[in-house]
Length: 409
Picture 1 (cartoon, rainbow, N blue to C red):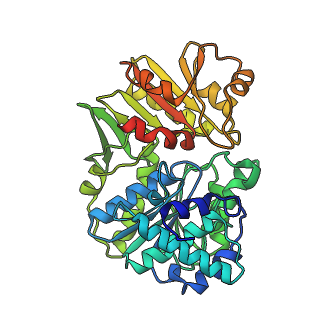
Picture 2: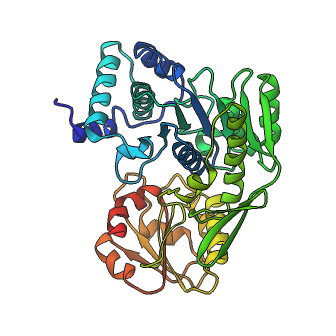
């Protein structure tokens, strides 16, 4: 097979690679064969349930705007796999993506290393960042932390743990403490870790840090966010910064980022907060198009739904809202519905192509308190999007990704 971008995607989404199998043995072997690039670059490692993607994106943009060649590895993607691996906010080229995937898979096959999709992508990211001489790379965990493929760097510059809530309970545990233990697994011996004092898993994180002789830096005060003159303003240390990312939850996320910047300054990094905060973009996280009156947010778990509800009340208190929603069967969509939707809300349930997508009939049979809910297909979507009311597109990021280009255009 000639490995072009489409072939690389087919390989990654094949049943042979597309599964989850936590553990570090396989990623350790393939990275050793690649020369251990993860130990030759500076890394900031970020774990958590909610907010880790935003923290990664904000911090990466600040560092980029401060003059550092910055790598960014996140998941999942919305439309293309190349979104997951960026340098200075630019996606890896499709031809380079295919080349790296082919090389890594070839080495793995020759050495009988049966890599998962995420392990292939993680190895690709580390090698790509090393080859491209990045000054620093921001690395987001995929699932959990302790046995996540990204948890392979021996000496990260810094680790950050964002808010923790119940999600992926089938793999990470049924309690906050169990999940916090998995997330805290990214803490290394004698390392530096930043966490909010309000984090639900703070006691477990503290204990892990003590056991690892790591320095725990706690954030005790959130940033302030106000919305005035149709602009989102971030206030910290009595200074105001224009900050285009909507979301009251960014109070905690930005507080973690600012604490990280303070620590980086102590290492003699030069930080341009104003430029970095003003130019940040992060798709499908309270992404608002004022002209089309469309809000896109991947609120895929109960905590995310609660935050979306708070933000709708804060930013759009008097607007009639139309919801376009879908979900997958691994999410607690009954609880999400109780949090997010009122009985009289106008809701369109969008069926999309994914093996775990919940069907309309299943949804209405289980979410019985919703009366004004209709099935919609992608063909009907444009008619709804042309309406004047606020259109809130939320739920599964897989669903959002499948219609993202349609929405944007």
